Amino acid sequence: MMIILDLLSILLICLGLFFFFASAVGLLRFPDTLCRMHALAKADNLALGCVILGAMYQQDDPLVIGKLFLIWAVTLLSSATGGFLLAQRIRRKFLAREGEV
Amino acid sequence: MTTGLVFDAVLAFSLVVLAIITLRQRTPGEAVVQLMIFGLLLALSWLRVDATDLALTEAAIGSGVTGALLLAALRRTGFGKPFPSAVSAWLRYPVTIGCALLGVVLSLVVMHTWDSPAGLTDLAYAHLKESGTQNPVTAVILNYRSIDTLLEIGVLLVAALSVYTLSGPASGTPVKPPGPIFRFYMRIMTPIFWLVVPYMVWVGGRAPGGAFQAGALLSGLGALTLLGPSPWPLRLKRRVVRWGLTLGFSLFLAAAAWMWQYGNLLAYPPDQAKNWILLIEIACTLSIGISLTIMFAGCAGWLHEDPKRAS
Image (cartoon, rainbow over all chains, first blue to last red; front, side):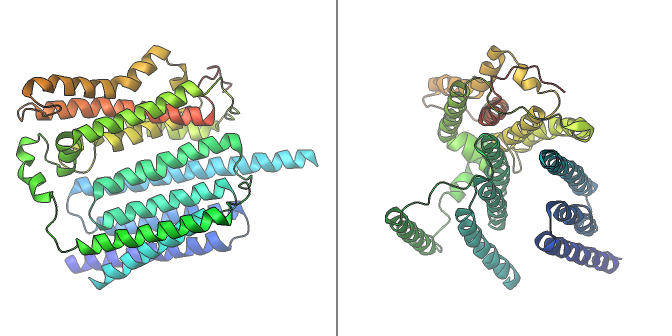
C-alpha cells in the first residue's frame, strides 16, 4: 500500500515538474503578454495541482491535507483573478491605442 | 546530503545572479519585479537553514509588502520611464569594491565561527518555560529582546506617520472600476484573510508566526480593499486611524513602564508573560497592518482622497 502511494506521489510530482518546466519555457518563448499569461496560468493550475496532490499522498494528518488543498485553491483563485486584471489592463491599453489611430 | 548541497549551491548562485540582474534593469518597473523574485528566493534560502519565521517574514514583508509599496509609488512616477543617467564610474567602482570586500570579510567571519558552539541557542531554550511562549523565536522577539521589537515598532510608526503627514491631497490617478471578477475574488478572500490573520497571531506562540507576519497579511488585505470597489479604509475617521496606528507602540510602551515596578523594563513576571505577549502581539498586528496600509495608500497617492469613488 505504501509503495503504491509513494509511486503515485513520485508520478504526480514528476508530472507537476514537467508542467512547471513547460510553463517556464512558454513564459520565455511565447511572443506577447497574453500568451505568456496563458503559460503562467497553466503552471498555477496544473503543475501546482499535481505537486500538491503528490504531496498529499505523503501525509497522514487530515488537517495538513486540508491546508495543502487550501494552498492550491487560493492560488487558483488568485492567479485567475490576477490574470484577468492583467488582461483587462492590456485590453484597455490596446483599445486606447486603437482609438488614437 | 549531496542533493541538498547541489540545491543550495544553485540557490546561492541564482541569488547572486538575480541581484546583478535587478541592478542592471533599465526601468524601475522591471527592477521592482526582479526585486520581488529575489525576495522570494531569499525566503526559500531562509527555509533551507530552518529559519521558518524569517522565511515567512521575508516572503510577506520583504517580497510582498515592499513590492506592493514600490509598485504603488511607481504608479505616480511611471513604470517604464528609464532610470536617469547612470552613476558615474568614480562612485560606482569604489562602492562595488567596498561591497565585495565586505562580503569577503563576512564570509570569513561565518566560516571562522562555523564550528564554535551555537551562540545563545542553549540559553534561549533553557528559559523557554518562563518566557510565556513555546516558540523560541517568539520568546526572543517578545521577551528576551523585546526592547528591540519595541524600537522596531517605533520605527514603523515614524515611517507611517511621515507618509501620513507628507502625502498631500490625493494625487494618484484613481483606480478604474475592477469589474465583477475582482469583486467575486474579494468576497471569497476577505473572510479567509480574517481567519488567517488571528490564526497567525495565535500560532506564533508555538510555531512560526506572530505579529509581523500577521500584520503584513492584514496590510495585504488593506491594499486589496483599497484597489477594490469600496475602499472603506479611506473613509475611516482620522481619529480611528490615528488610534489604530499608535495602539501597538503605546501599549508596548505602557507594558514597559508597568514592568518598571518589577525592577526592569519589559521584564515580564513568568506567570503573566503569556498574557502580556499575546496582548502586545494583537495590538502590534493591528498597528503594523494599519501602518503598512497607510504607506501603500500614501505611496499610490490616495491617502487624502475624496472618498467618493465611482464604482
